Image 1 (cartoon, helix red, strand yellow):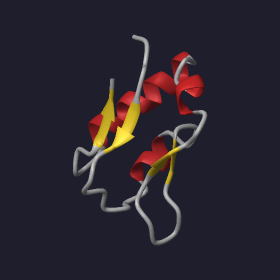
Image 2 (cartoon, helix red, strand yellow):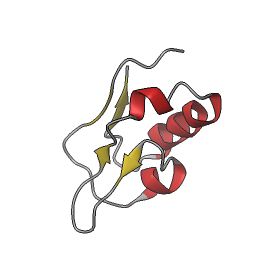
Image 3 (tube, one colour):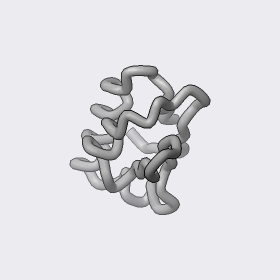
Image 4 (cartoon, one colour):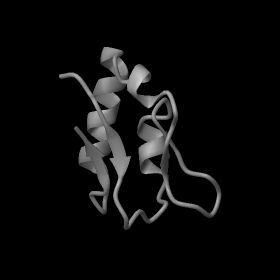
Length: 68
């Protein structure tokens, strides 16, 4: 699967799970909501990172991680 877009919808609770599961894609600054790193699309081409991205998306407790 080719990833064309990764984004976080409104409602992130800053639980850090996404960053723990996929630090190549996500960063949760202290006291802020999750952000997608600037090179995320490039990183997502690696099979291991793509797998971690999917795990983070499915494990997100508030389901705000979106991948297209």
